Image (cartoon, rainbow, N blue to C red; front, top):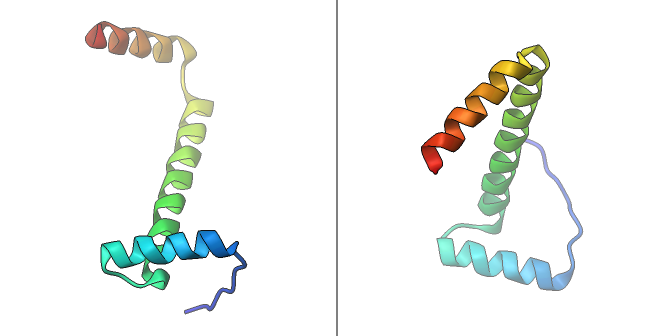
Length: 72
């Protein structure tokens, strides 16, 4: 396991401590959870871009129109 030192403004550190305390976890665990969320979002973005590069634009537009019809 790696150790990471980060510099944060005091007010942000205080707010993160409050958030961790409200969740009943340590600041370390909170940062670990937040980084997991950020990495999952990044992975989804990369998968989307890869799929979009191989996709059919007409089919994509057709699916968007179908989705619009469902939400209206």
